[in-house]
Image (tube, rainbow, N blue to C red):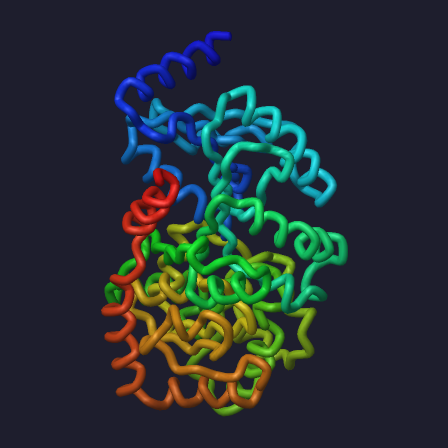
Length: 388
């Protein structure tokens, strides 16, 4: 009751100064306390900036489990935990179509922003959805069968339900238009940003980081979650071929700890030169990125590719796949390869390792290009769409 009175009082205050949006709901279920990646980082970086920058507004954040105490929000933010935890497609339906629908009415939400693209189809509340990419439409077999079926059944409905769609690249915008028949005028592109922890490291910091994570060896770096589209198997095969003639540069793989060396048919010597680090904190990952010889990022499908911009901010050259949005994001900070060709990936590893002039030019280009990507700028652009 006290909570409801507080929201009613805030709503009256906002109404008195003629704001068109009164209480803004945000789907915050991906803001998790541990191993937060992808949607979670995107959600948190934008939510904390938007709520801080607009103290005149009331925000209600909807979680599907207890809110980790490490997340501190401003006084204009109310956090609400809704049952059940969304760990299965059937629970997604329950959460969005029953629990969230009722909560939107209870808390008198005037507009809902969903950073992971999901919508409540049964709610009449206007909704804005961030649809990052449609990888599940192009490569449905890369996901578990039930998850793939859910995405391919519901995301077209979410796209049509949304009052407006945000996405993270022009590639994804065109894909949504082509795949779902959504008007391009109803889709806005807002690039992702980069955590402030990513920066150019000193020689001493590079030495210390390599000593800690790669047995003091220079290394190509891959950062990614456990998805076939990340193309890790082909990258490992390419590095295996590369390592037969180059003993100076190793490979570091950061991501889900389920990637184990025994999943690949590797020689003992090659196994000793691939370092599987599992999940890293942002502080650790920023150092591992900054100390890399180059980022080797070869997914065959992406909506944005945050590791690209993290490498750019660190002044680290990039070997990138020539697919989907990646050339749009990496620009002249990368050399490109065919992600389906182990031979081509291997060739690009050799080219960059043997050409110091190219390496230096890509590093300089990376730093210059990194200014295009900012969470502060992204927060302003997302707010412009929310507040219309």
